[in-house]
Image (cartoon, rainbow, N blue to C red; front, side):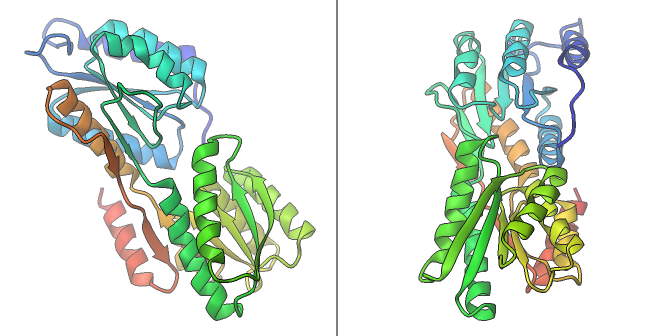
Length: 328
């Protein structure tokens, strides 16, 4: 995750863009004869959301709609100000990864009452007025990787393992817990000697290196670290490599960023498997659903995009996934 520019600098930039959309010769979504304008809000500026934005841009161009992009940086006040500012500028829809399932919904009520369609992606909103939610199954992301870990434990560790977890409970608690529970339920199924020894928060690569290193020192008999997101996965792998414990400790992770793909194909054998999401498709499908909703066409209330397991023992699948990602 990167540090975003200040809210006011970003808002000024976006207001200029949005104002341009309303000049003569352009159009606001309030007039059905003119192009639809959609506000797309990301939660962070990291590799995952960069891919989401790429998908949004592709679909917006395909649909012939105006797309204005903003980043809340997981700050509810920033998100609320963005929503309030742009509802005045003739939006047809707001597409966002919400900062908070309940509080974000409250901020969006006014926009909904003005006829603006609301599409959530990546995470759900607790509100009936949401046209559709496009997301991964958070539990499936963990379960898929957990099943791979269970196979590894059964075949390589004699059915016994001590597991540590790096998660993001304090950032997005529902998402984080669903992934961790999915992983642990699958990894321990039928294996009573698989034990959880530690669960720590670390979702950015830098802090995750330090947190994983601390775990290695506090629990030198760890066999596996499960990381619930991209940053944790990268940090855990690097910490183990730096400690020279790649033969003893393995990583099972989440997401499929380029660095993770490279780690899966690396000779060190540390990262064993990840379950990747499809952020590009998520962004594209969220925009497509928003356009349909604005036009009064039917949309599915929920769209779940399954994750994809990428495991070290199937390198051709990994290379194929990388080729598809690079082609976009």
